[in-house]
Amino acid sequence: MSIMIKTVRALAAAVVLAATAPAFAAGSGPHIERQQWSFSGPFGSFDRAQLQRGFKVYKEVCAACHGLRQVAFRTLAQDGGPSFTEEQAKKIASEYTVTDGPNDSGDMFDRPAILADKFPSPFPNEQAARAANGGAYPPDFSLIAKARAAHRGFPWFVFDAFTQYNEQGPDYIYALLTGYEENAPEGVVIPEGKHYNHAFLAGNAIGMAPPISDEQVEYTDGSPMTLDQYARDVSAFLMWAAEPKLEERKQMGFRVIVFLLVFASLLYFTKQKLWRNVAH
Image (cartoon, rainbow, N blue to C red; front, side, top):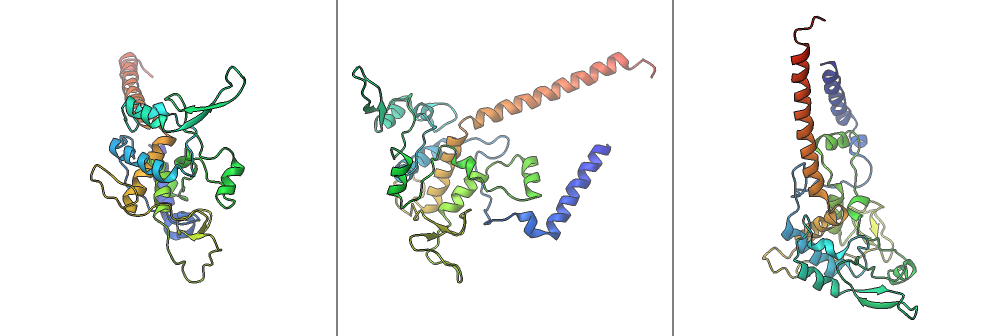
């Protein structure tokens, strides 16, 4: 009981601190709006259709500069992912070229990718990537949804831990893709060759031009072909790429919690049975 009282008091103190020190509570950096995702929460799961649309956006827009070198083609057809058929995944893989070898002559050679291969990088090395992007190095997207998470300041991260909110990464990707503005606010100077984006964590000036716009990627399932929808879909896909076992992890966690509750109950009733009539 005393522990519960202390916990309640600590939470109350956190709320008071948030009210009296809003700047400290909100944390530094741009404000990233919290979005609604099908995979959020302890029982959330990926929307298969959304993952397939997000992959389409990645392939047609993002893949020209950003790789997925930690993601294997076979995972596109595995449970918990976009759920392409094996034939569809093979066809997708065959559209990429990977370097293999050495052959019997000791030479490296190019061949169409197979399911066991991982997505190849769009550039042969970092120097080539920087040369093609004005000195900027486009990051790999395999773990971007985890690496670019815009974590909230105290005490909100405490509440996020209690509610198991872990979608700051997709929130940031969505905010970044939709955060471009043609004109910067008064007093904000954007260097030549940069673009104003109010959600960019490293400052307001970002080297990447707005990558996507309305009607740029054709959807065949009737979903809106808007910037907002594109941003949501590719954010969800990149979350899956960063954590492909998310659904399996949540299912295992639920089983573990149920087991612990049952085990604790059995221990309690066993104790009552054995020690109920024993004088203390």
